[in-house]
Length: 614
Image (cartoon, rainbow, N blue to C red; front, side, top):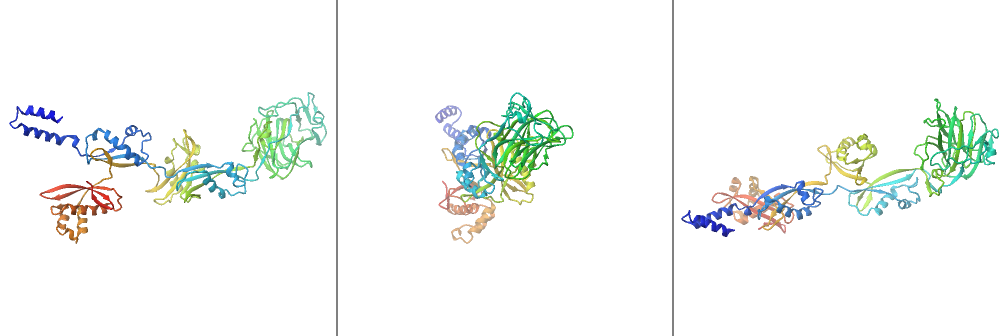
């Protein structure tokens, strides 16, 4: 290229100059001075979203400083602005750096194997167990990796009373399938039902049946009819049940109801009654159902039910506690509902050997059918072979732990778990955290927690820190447990940022761009005052006028290069006393020598000393 320029200039100047070679050299010198390939530049550049896409960083950040140092040199070279910058050029690149979460939190749900450690063969701790005795060891056995300060939430069940395992067994399946002839029940049943009180043969058998979808004793055989004007009480034997919980069910359709009494119950062989089910008028011609545990005084529910409508009544009696519950269903269900229509507590420890049906003043006129007795709800609702079941009430609990010194321990006051009540306090309407008791993409925690924490901890001092754990729902990952560190800054709770804005400096080494930690520093008057104080009395500097240096804020021609380098080393130690090995400083300063001139030197820390970096 230069040969071509020479030729053109020679030809051109041959016609215009008396001294063509001088003009040629002047033109070449001018070109060299303005050639961008000789530029030494300094700039700052912040990556854009398009830059991250070009780098293949879909999350818009680097995952480590090391990755940034590896990937950015090639990127800088691709920016046209820096195409011809050469040695000693520098670019300070601003970028997003993922520094990780403040801590991790794991949601651990105990398994049957975990409960076995406590001696429980049930899916839950027994009521007399102390879960904290076992939870730390259970977490240690099941969480493979944790860092100091991480959290785990152990979620478990504990029974509130006696719990045990039973095999679902039906003790009575009475479909009242006694042929096609109506008449009194005692005769029709051939002795299956017997009188234990009142006038014989009043209670009637009919050939029509009651039905309910999915109930196993539905629309089979006939039914029995009871009347409020009758006085006969009857019973039938069942396979005895002497422990645990007993369930009885019957389809019922009531045509008339009065002021109320019981009509259906359990019996023992000594005529001890339990779980007495009754009905009465609600005051508006509808039905209220009730139950008495062992007393004839019943507790009635508050739901009004219709006459001439088939319902499924399920009553239960807990032999150990004496508690009886009554459920009124319009459809058969597989599991026992959480809330009973009515509940009553009476004498405990009554064995169940019979089921009784009673007629009496104040009682209903009704049809009963499909009577079943079993030791589990599931057996009432199915004729199939069922797996063993655990009987007993249990509650869901959780306990937080933190990882410290290689073990799971109870966390300090720095830990806070957001409860359902806390979520509710943030709003329960649609689009608010209390709606489903979690945060999510449309209800981000940082929109709510700073205000919540400010109200919860109004006197938290400046700098106070709190590790907050909360439920979060993600459309892609479902329900999960998350958490973050919050710190009081200027009186407000501020969330820890897992991605930060930071910078890396790169320098051109003459061939390519390389990470460069050089700190650029221009000396000011205070620095020369510092030199004056530090070097006073130092005989190695007796040849220079320190006072003159301080006055004019520059070195003069009496200073040797070694003396200047020594002074700059003192300044580097002052500016960065803990500087790491390899740290660089580019010092710019003034020297008086036939005028004031600007000079610069790069110092690097090597083997604990500041030396010139050539």
